[in-house]
Image 1 (cartoon, rainbow, N blue to C red):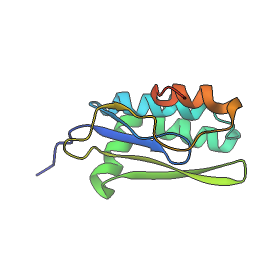
Image 2: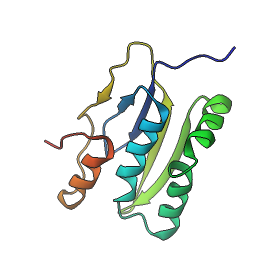
Image 3: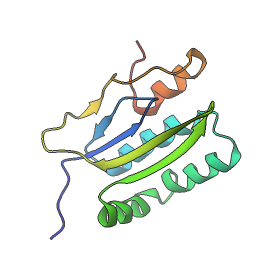
Image 4: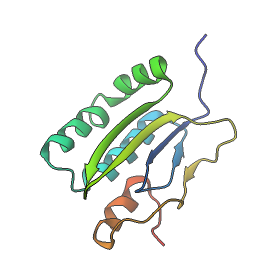
Length: 120
């Protein structure tokens, strides 16, 4: 029997705090909006557009059903950052949080758009 998630949590570790959404399409749209403004380079941009752009819900649902979560990484400014999509834990708060390290100032606005987090 397939477990029904209470929602879906997305995070770009080292860039944003986690954000939990009721619907997977909303979670993926927020994640794509955040990723697409980062300086990823063409190859990484296209890979993330494939995973989180048009048709993403079906692809991600397959990963979640098989592996329990989807974890991808990208390189930026000499570091590797994991991007995670997973079913929300029971009782996990809905909506973005402001936890997590801050980006360099030039990238903060784009990352804030990522999941609607205010950058304080």
